[in-house]
Length: 286
Image (cartoon, rainbow, N blue to C red; front, side, top):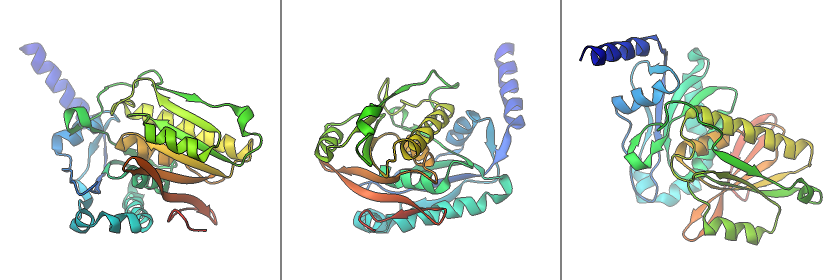
């Protein structure tokens, strides 16, 4: 009993030593379904993985707006503006914390990729995992694990094209992704989890690792292989989608972000740079 008490006290003292940071939530409904905000326990457990604690209360920026639930097509139509607005709000509110914050975000994968791109990789805004197996917000591993994914590409195939497909399969590598890649008929780069599932990336440091690897990959495609456009086919958790978006930067190929539409995939978002600023655009804009 004394040992248990000592461990509890040690954990409490350790928590008090963590850096206080703001915490945000963005919940966009998917197919009319809603998701609950993280509770105090969820927040504390997630933030412990990055040795941080919440300052103030949870900043709820979007909470399953009724208009998006009743008419999902409104969200899809205005996705670029909605996502940019929420990202700008976070960046403005984290000026005093050097853009260090935690983010509990859930919604369509394409929107989350766009959100990550708008937040960028120069900040320390860490997305948190909605752990499907436990129906809660938590990172299942307390410590970073050995790299849990492989990157496969054939550089020789990139010599005579300025477009490629980037398939990121973390929760699954679906038949619709493979079919879409086949229809595009372009060289394919695969980033696949060694153990697919919602927790394929089980710790935020592994997410940062993935972000860094993808950033280097996109930079190499642009600088060395003169690739202008990347078709992104992704099936991943909410947190991984944001990490993937954060890999996007200036002087990289444009990203066409696909999402699932029934048994098929459709372009939902175009991520580009304009005058040194990352911009989201409707899929078929110039």
